[in-house]
Length: 255
Picture 1 (tube, rainbow, N blue to C red):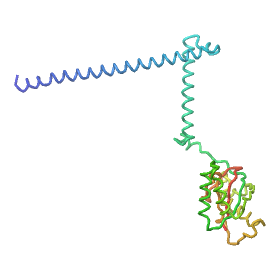
Picture 2 (picture 1 turned 60 degrees about the horizontal axis):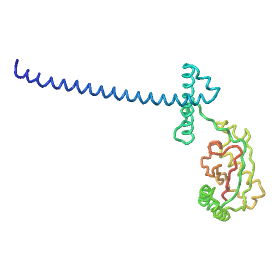
Picture 3 (picture 1 turned 30 degrees about the horizontal axis):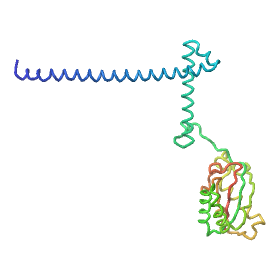
Picture 4 (picture 1 turned 135 degrees about the vertical axis):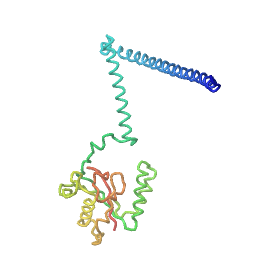
């Protein structure tokens, strides 16, 4: 036998033996890990079984459900499934409500907003130059909605901004004629239609006679939704702009 062959045999045999030992060691570790894990799972299942058995035995009606091993198994499985499903539904819908994720079938079951049938409109007037001040007023109104201490500041700002001491409130109803010509009549009336109706109401009312101006158009009508946010998408529908049936909204006419 040559020297090279002897050297090869000498080097490969120990390496091969080490490889087998390493493989056996890893296998033993995996088996040990699986054994410990199964043991822990078994302890948890025993604890759950004990808790469920104690709870079911506490009532005469449910105690009859665990008389036999089969009925006990079925009853405990049903209780566990119910608890898991209940927790899943609570977490799932809470996440949707909080905006953490969206409804999984939203592309299949699309929601169609209920069109706005009638709305209460509060009208007031401001100078066109005060448009930015108007936006500031409504931003502060949102911030101070629940802060009583700052209401006096808002009242002072309103007295300087608006021409009328109080808003004039109207009740407007929307008939099919208001939206039957729109692209999607099922969504109801649009913001543009509401602006036109408010402008007509303004021009026809003697209450605003001294403010009448032929140059005024619907572009002078500023709409705020039920969250006191300005609406700028005039071609959109009321129901898609947070203006729903029965809401009270503010409409400001710039003169």
